[in-house]
Image 1 (cartoon, rainbow, N blue to C red):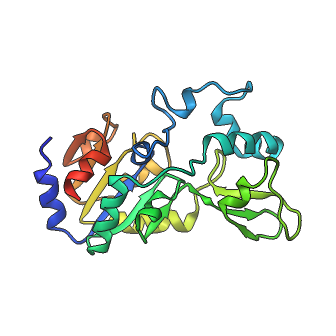
Image 2: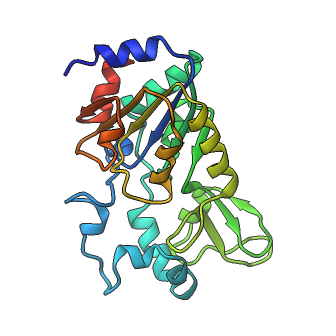
Length: 240
């Protein structure tokens, strides 16, 4: 795969924005959602689908079952950043990359060293009491097999992740739009661009250096100025 053109574009820009999805983390052995062997194709131990179990209504009405599923399927403590995460962190440190916008909740971008990470769907590493707002880390969630309760007021501790039926954080969304609309180079990687409203962010880029990196075609391929089909970690390793 010839990535010389991609390398030239990156070398000549100091205003790059990256927008990534689940495919960025699959190389770190975190399964995606919608592929043939993704989370949504798995059988659950209940008659509920994964989508149902990750909804706000299910969290409220079946809280214990939610946490059983969440701990077993959404948290990967042993996952490590891959070459995509590492290369993006290097580009930021070099002053080329302005922001990483991610749909992932695993915190691997920060683990790799990225500083300006906009998490559209939240993070498993942030959790808060629904009653008093006290913050808790991931270890607190994993320290119990039951519903995690606040040690301050007894309220239920909720992961700071966006569930189905919940809205994206307005400030994160606005900041993402701002970076994308001002970007010189816009790299979109590891996402099928099928989940809205996140996928709609692509429409805010008006430049002529939109680069798509994904294993399979997307609905936005006709908008891209450069397309690479393949494993994003392997492709980014070659430009790192």
